[in-house]
Image 1 (cartoon, helix red, strand yellow):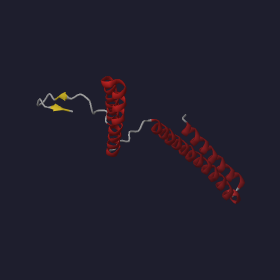
Image 2: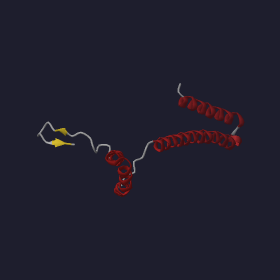
Image 3: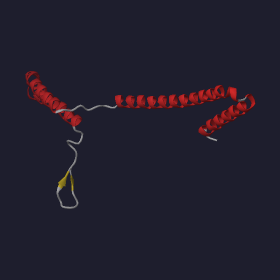
Image 4: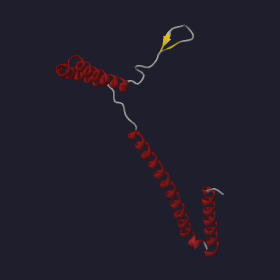
Length: 144
């Protein structure tokens, strides 16, 4: 017997007891017996609704927790443009410092760092940006 069947059986027993009590006590107690039975039905309904609401709330909280843990990529044209401008502005002093202290190797290291940072930013914005292109088997054209 499942949980729902057990509750239905309990409710059926309550109804049978109420009807039996009505027969024993008479019609003058009928409204009090019906009110008592309806109160028990209301309690059962309230309990079921409360359990459902708690379960849905817990599911929403779990979903919100999962969403907050997943990284969100907020990439917009303005963000990419701003990152490019900042990168170029910082390239000037980094180039001067690198070339001034270590000549050509220092300049190459500075620019390798600038290119590396921009490469990582581009991959973060579009993970398929540098993906492989495969050849279509139908018409010989390249496709993404």
